Length: 357
Ligand code: B12
Ligand code: SF4
Image (tube, rainbow, N blue to C red; front, side):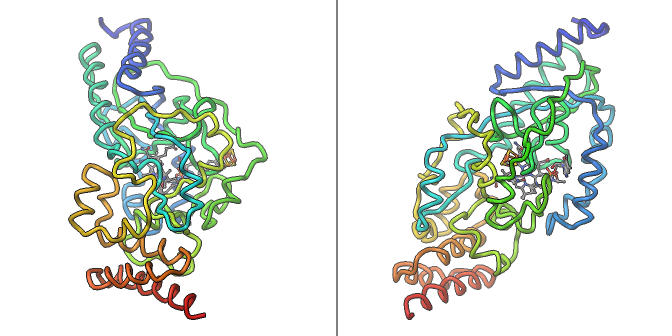
């Protein structure tokens, strides 16, 4: 097949969607390779310093909405959606059990980065075989405005929680992209504004991180505090974090559109080591070797052992006072670095004060 005529390109676009489905993607859409509206939103967000310590967001700002600068010749962005929700039954139970550790649903199984990039590369190869051209696959960590491009490509619309939401599938999915120089036909965006008067996510965010509709101040977001932040977690935010020790899903859990969420059939995303239903203390008492073994191939490993201890110490500090918690905190205190130890001391003080009252 050649791609010289628009009919050929229409056929190729349809074929790409079929291949995408065969590779496990739930939705594929194609958009132009520019996004000025979202570039402006990003600029405002950075100006307010909502990115906190994520300096990579500011450093590569110009590239995010300008695919051609990241991969020369790009004129189209192919956006892909991969559902990850393993099952949602336990979320509320764990969140309401203060001795248990809540780990966000996206991180319970295998790290998604490699998996998605590999499949996108396979898709890019198929396109290349048929149409030639130059293609490059991205997922998450590259300077790409993923939600903005996915919205433009018709994969969904951006909710007040800033998540990309699909009217038939909610928001429990990852995004990935292929930049291409093949002039594929463009998909229409979905209508926007489906939040209406709802503001459940703004009202329910534990730390008040959704400071205005569509605007997340990452510095308050539990996902940032537990995953991105390398140093100490601000003390005033710790009590608000409850038992959320790696990421946070509250703004998705309360969203009414997630009653349409699709359960993933990717076995790689199934919870490992009972991470969807573990006691805070059990995880806190893992040795460094156990942490490395149990988080091999998982996104959790990226934060390292000391931040793992830091996050769990905050969770334990928020749990009901107990001598068992004091014992666990004292056991791990000597192996903690200064940063983690400060959180352990905070938690110890909370438990001891409550017990001595
Ligand atoms: C930095 C980052 C974070 C930061 C900052 C979050 C944020 N909202 O920006 C932190 C660490 C907090 C984070 C948390 C999470 N993240 Co994150 N994150 C990213 C990353 C790397 C960049 C996002 C970005 O560009 N932020 C900059 C700001 C300006 O963009 P934004 O908040 O998305 O805002 C957009 C819209 O709201 C809109 N907008 C802004 N202002 C306004 C105003 C109006 C009036 C309107 C109409 C629109 C509008 O324009 C903005 C730009 O597109 C992307 C991957 C990527 N390369 O894109 C993943 C990504 C967005 N994250 C993802 C996920 C899954 C999460 C978490 C659910 C993980 C978790 N469970 O803990 C949470 C969700 C928190 C939340 N509500 O955003 C997925 C989202 C998939 C989806 N369905 O939307 C992505 C796409 C990763 C992926 N490849 O799948 N994340
Ligand atoms: S919870 Fe309500 S306001 Fe927030 S994203 Fe969902 S529909 Fe929109």
